[in-house]
Image (cartoon, rainbow, N blue to C red; front, side, top):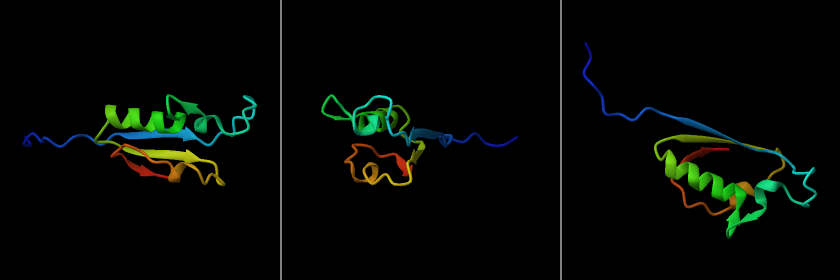
Length: 81
């Protein structure tokens, strides 16, 4: 029998954010559209961080996306781009 551990299980979050949003016709990818003072991308990651603070996050971006990494996030998630 092994001793019980208090270590939190590692949870991986996968956030698909590589779309171009061409069907919306917005001119920018929909993840960068404004929503309540931030982008949809920021709102999503900050809410995931609040719900799963001990997890890691993989964000799937388009190869030429230079925006995501430059956005300010109020989030302590360890993000792999």
